Amino acid sequence: MKRWLAFLFLFSAALAMADVPMNDCKLTAPVSALSLTPAQLKPYQQGNQAVLNVQGLIFPAGTDKTIDAEPTDETDTALRAAINYHRSIKTQGAEQIATYWHPAMQPMKLQQLNQPGVMQSTKELYANTDSVELLGMLKLNGREVVFIRHAGKTQAYITVESNGQYYLVSDPGLTPQVSIAIAAFDRGTATMTR
Image (cartoon, rainbow, N blue to C red):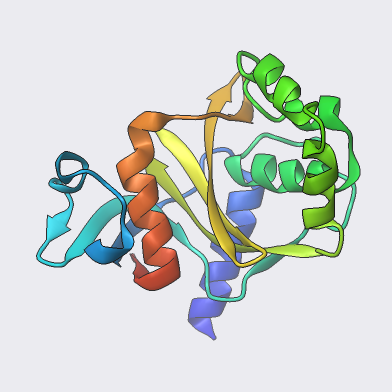
């Protein structure tokens, strides 16, 4: 019970504060679950496992967050930005969805969303979904990355802070760490220590 109360406090802090108290986390994934080059894998490989030691929060299994609501437009934490992005996908149009991406990326994201069939298939994917599973939030090379499972697929939402707001970004430099974390959530272990 004490551990659950401590988690609730940390989870509330994650939603309410831009500076989230992070803990030491260890994520372990089988090398066979990864599609990384030998050079990408080398710093993390320990035998037949890839190990990622980082700061972050690992949420207990089954931690869901509703997306069956209008977005609050609050993006003052990485977690709020990711959840409101999902809510926006479910309830809003391409122009609103694109605003969750970094301003430099918004024109490209808007162009992608406006391609024939993209919005329709995206909306269909979320049509019968009322929540997503929160897996964790990790600090990777100065970025806060939120890991969410939706429709059986784990995805990483890389964020960057600008003027007190968090935006989604693409960061190919994080590919090894993100790949290991996703594989750890799906087929390995993710643990948090004090």
